[in-house]
Image (cartoon, rainbow, N blue to C red; front, side, top):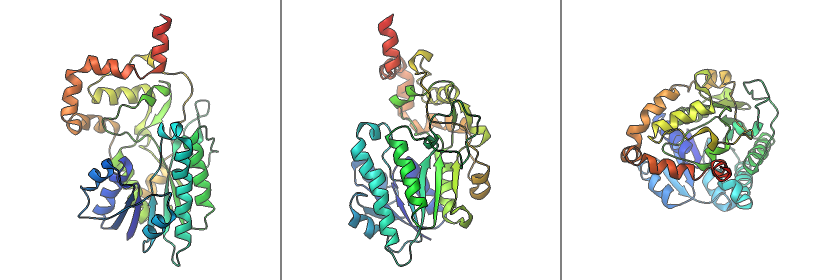
Length: 317
C-alpha cells in the first residue's frame, strides 16, 4: 500500500517506519525539517519518499496526502512542550490535524486514517478499578490531553474511514525526563516496547477490522507495573539508579493498565517484554551507558536537581 506517515522520525514514527518498510509498503514520510529529523531521515532516505513540511500550512498538507491509500498521523507536540507553549502546540496538534482531515476529505478517493492517541485521555484513574477499556469516559486534564481528546472527536466525526490507537507508556531510550518526578510511585502504568508499537501501527494499515474502532496499545498483562518498579528498571538499565522516593509527587497522574485483548487479537504485536527492553539498554546506549556508570554520583545529583519535590524537601530540613 501507499502510506503517508506524519511524524516519521520520532520515537514511535521511526519504529513504525521500519515495520512499514519491512512489510513492503511504499512510504512517504512527512515531517518538519529540523536538524534532528534530517539526521534521523538519513537512515531511510534510500527506502522512502521524504516530504518536508509543516502541518500548520494547508498547502504542505494537501500536497503530501495525494495518491495514498492510508495516512498514519503520529506528528504531535507532547509534554512538557505542550504545557509550556500551549498556543503553539494547539496550532500543530489540533490545527494540524484539522488541516490533515480537510486535505483528505478534499480528495476524490480519500485514504483511510490512523490516528495515534494516548492512555492519558482517561485522566487520573487511581480510584477506578483497572484495566481501562476503549469505551471508558475520557477526562482530559492538561493541554496535551485536551488536544488528543479534541482530535479524537474530529477524527470520529470526519466521515472518513478511521482507526484510533491509544498508546500506553512507550519508553525513549536514554531519555531522562524531569516529568518523571510528576508520577506517584504507586501509579499503575503499562509499558509497551517501541518496536511493538511500530508493528501495531503497521499491522493496522492492512487490518480492515481495525477501522471504525478505538484500540488500546500496550504490553498486555506482562507489561503492567507500578511506576516505581517500571522506573527502577529504566534507571538501572541506564546505569543511573533509582532516585529516592521523596523526589516524587503524590499528586495523581494520568496513566493506568489497559485492556489490550482486542488490539492484540487484531494486530498481533506484543513481542518484547519489559525485561528485554531493560537488557537492551546498555548496548543501545553504548558509550553513554559507560559514562553513566563512571559519573553516576554526578549524574544522580543532576537528575535530582530536576525534581521540585526533592528540592522542597531539602529546603525544609
